[in-house]
Length: 186
Image: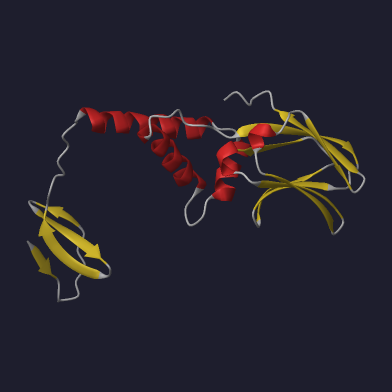
């Protein structure tokens, strides 16, 4: 049962069996309902998978979280990660985590390494220091970009699995080596 509030007063909370609700700017009272919790095996399994996903997100390295935040559209990286995590469990597959690649500048410390997916820059790293990026095989293609001043040399990687590591990227007088990071086994 719903009672619409036409007096303009604002209520919130629950008293006895009535709950005050504001939905889309309209205040009303409704019967307080305690949701059913069947604790079925499927529900418990999904809750456990979700809890594992949350724990895994918390254990991700900064570059892995940054990757998901970069590719997320109209949602957060956290929500995208958990969505992919639950989808993989629904399909009966083991969830995949982003590979962590360590970048070592070899020549040209005044340039930049950029990882893009489409028009979105996921990582922009100055070549003055070593850096770390993350990416997933299933989210390819990626553009590996070397930038010096306003000039870019772009290498599109369609199949990350076929990328032999370590790999050395050269262009514009810049040279950088990418290899699996020591922490890539996460």
